[in-house]
Amino acid sequence: MPSWLISMVVHLTLLLVLALIGRSTNKVGRIELLFRQSSESSGMELAEFTIAATAPLESFERSMEEERIDTTQLVSLDAEAEMFSLVPKLDASLFDPVVASTGQLDKSNKMFQGRSGTMKARLLKMYGGDQTTEDAVEAGLVWLKRQQLRNGSWSLHGPYANGARGENQTSATAMAMLAFMGAGSTHRGGPYQKELLRAARWLVAKQDRQGFLAGSEMGHERMYSQAQATIALCELYAMTGDSWIRPYAQSACDFAVASQSPQGGWRYQPRMDSDTSVTGWFVMGLKSGDAGGLEVDPYIWPKIERYFDSVSQGYTGGYSYMPNVAPSPAMTAEGVLCHQYLGRQRNMPGMAQSLGTLVQNHPVKANEADVYYWYYATQALHHYGGPLWNQWNEELKATLPARQEKRGREHGSWSPSGDAWGGYAGRLYTTCLSIYCLEVYYRHLPLYDHAELD
Image 1 (cartoon, rainbow, N blue to C red):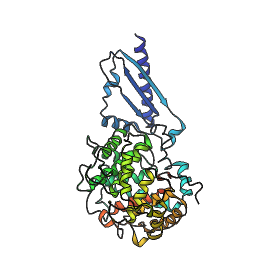
Image 2 (image 1 turned 30 degrees about the horizontal axis):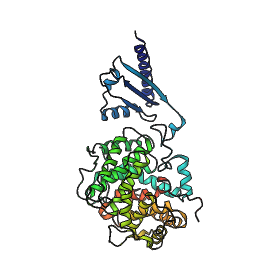
Image 3 (image 1 turned 180 degrees about the horizontal axis):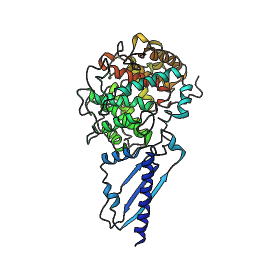
């Protein structure tokens, strides 16, 4: 018997033993299989897959089916195979839910590294969160879990009370996923692993060849949905490094780049127009993809910056919905946040004026709820830090938990009643954005060094 065939039999036997052990415990360590052919081979392509340390075998089998991997190819290699390697990789980092799927995370990706473990606890304390804010987040996530539909998606209509006027399952599902991920769960680990796995499978099944995920949605909300779904997939990939998610997240980024308008932003139709609201969601999606190591054409960033400059009031602060329109608090908060992610320094003229105006003239008030505005202002002020953040946060962490439903069927959610957009967007929308605000302490690491702030 040739030596290569003996080697293959031995290694395949070892692989089967490991698989049987994994099935008895329902989990296996990470295994990489690499097959290569010589230049004279019949043209069989490189086959590669990963079994994560936290992924049950049945989840892996479903992933194999969805990725259309022909398992017969894995055992029908011809006699000219040059290499067959079986490399178990287990280390302490596998037990960190943020990096559980690969055992490693690009250390240059600091955007999402505060969402679990001791880092999460430190950030929560450092930036003013407490047990009350965490209890509110957890109650909100439990409510969201109860609303997931059998197919893995969420709906803006129900089954809860006070649904949205219109339906948009892509947005609803993406927003729910972001709430779970903001607290540290992924489809590979965390208390909401099962919910996220089902949601991710539902979401990626909607993607077409151009990377568009919202083809079934109606009207001008489709691009909002696309941007939100892009954020969800890019965050999921950045947090796990899961090779199954990567092509879907990359395709969503590619669609975003291709659909950028000549003005530099995005609006209701690809390549047609720009407004600050839609553009802000796409900026966060592309920045999430960039942080996760996906390919994002760097040419887009100067164009985006030019767009935000066109809606900025300059040194006096303030941003508008579109050029030559009066500024508003929500657009100002969104514009500042996007300029922060585009690299604007903390001491650049206009930032302090803009954020100071928001804190002083448009603070968090229970009787003037606007979670869309609060969502963007909370992020921008958290990145900025200092006394402005402290003042904003004291009002935020007192107001939002107090507004949360404390009893009954909708316990853990936030009523849309009285919110600026709640009557239109519904209960799931107000709940998700409220959760994002209360996860802000660790959801994204601050963009500026706050060690020496006044």
